[in-house]
Amino acid sequence: MEMHEVLTRTNSMILGSEVSRSTLLTRSTTADISAVDWIAQLNAKCKTILSAMCSHSDLLLKYDLTSREPDSPMIYVNTRMPSKFMFNMEAFPRLSKLEKLNGKQLQVEELVYHKMFEAVIERYTNSNQKPNPVLRDTRSSEFCYRMAIKVEAVPAQKALKARRLILLREFLILQHLWECFHREMKAKVCGTDQLIGFPMPFEFKNVVGCSEFDFTEDGMTYMHYNIHGAEEKVLITTIPQTVPDSTSTTIGSSLSYMATERLGPSLGYLIDLMRSQGKTFSVSSALKIYDQILCRMMIMHKYGVVHCNPNPSCFYFGPGESCNVLYISELGSALVKPEFNMQVPRFHDRFVSYLRFRERRCHFVQDVESAFYIFLYMLVGRLPWDGRTLGNLKPAEGMSMVQPSDDPYTDRSLTIDDKEKFWQNQDTISRAIRVVEMEIYDPLYVSFTADLLEALYSRTRESLQLSSSVGIANYMKDCCVGNTQAYNVYYNLRRVIATYFRFEILNQPLKDRQGSARLEQLNRSSTNDLRIAFDLSHWCWNHLDPNPNSSTSKRISFKT
Image 1 (cartoon, rainbow, N blue to C red):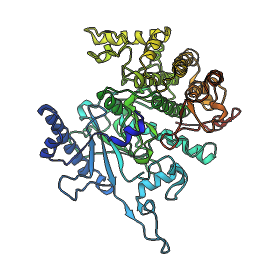
Image 2: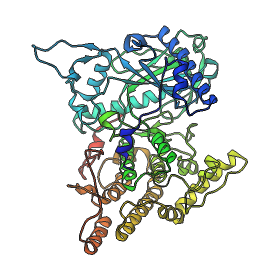
Image 3: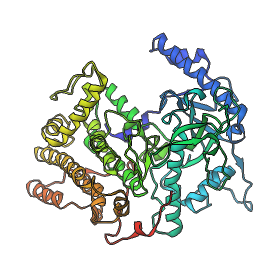
Image 4: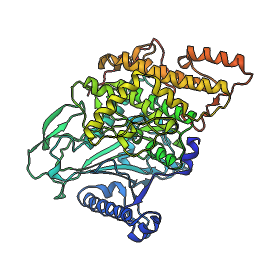
């Protein structure tokens, strides 16, 4: 099934914060009473927290939270919460209307205005035009009409451990990416679509005034992981709340929220949806998504950020007509220029890099290892070690699967061993390829596709072996400079991916020598090119092709 077809027929699972219990019951006809109770509890919890936010912050001045019709809320809360103390919601900003300009009828995008959000957009795009030319091709026309708001609500007595409060770090890392882009934009050394696939951050707000979340002792300390991953003691009154073009304030509670642009369903949600129907992604869809993941990582790594926890739930498709763009999010475990030998506490066992455990440090290339696991998961619907991480999961046809032990710590250790063996022996990937359902049934192209998938595995393995020793500073400097080792981590894979498709025009940096030789063999044996045509109207293809002699990344200094 093609991904654009899935996207047009599905929405993320959302629940209105003001939906009555009777409505909940009618929406849960196939669920048992325990599921209904769980949703009701979530509904009550969100209402309590939102009530505190509305009472003790300027939330109502910025967002339209009023419901004009019974059971038609203006806030929607995702039932899939990022963590125990977090939830995501969507809300409409309070927008002012502009008068007609000299009697001229304005477009719908020009009729809305919100002072704070407009200021952020103008800063990050260097343009105050509406529709904004920088965003026109990379964002939905609904951009800024509905906002995504992530709320972190940790009871104050549980917020003293470093791993608890992470929303501020997530905002600062996302802001770091956009500030780096902003400096490059001003210096005119990058394209205006450099941060396609990265949600724009609008604000971070700490809410003070609710007894359950307020810190009671002024000057008290708690352990905090800064954006570089170092654990340090921080005074409650000295944590900066930095928002572009605003004054710094302090944090006085463990209740905060962050507003970004709204996104569509996550890749994890869509994978689960397809698995529930007994389906996996087509090879072409998985490759298109895999390529976008690599492009997001390339730019993120260029700006010094290691995600540290890539998994399907970290990637979201854009809303509306931007559904062909994949966005990277969930940066709570990310690090900026990690220079400390510490383990970020939050990660996904199934997709975390084994190199991170073996080398006891975080490195950019570890994200690329996790990206390959996501790609394999899309193709097969299983990972070789899922028996340990998921328990009673049946293996895919033709694939063996390890079984869990009685000790979760042992399972974690054995899972890392399984991953190391996965990269030492090609038998596992060969067995996985045999169960992939090929789109092109011609025997020559089946063999061609299998060779391509093995090439992706081999080149990823080569990158893990060679590039993990490249220092952080050198890797960042060379990430987007052609023909460097860091650059080839992504483009050696992108070239293989591009070989699978027919393009009208393919830029030189994306032409693969080995792939071209293989295609010549196919052309001699077949009169027609049966490869899948890359449809740019349904899928985003990132043009990140630098000049091989470019020194762009050396001209900009990214301070944090």
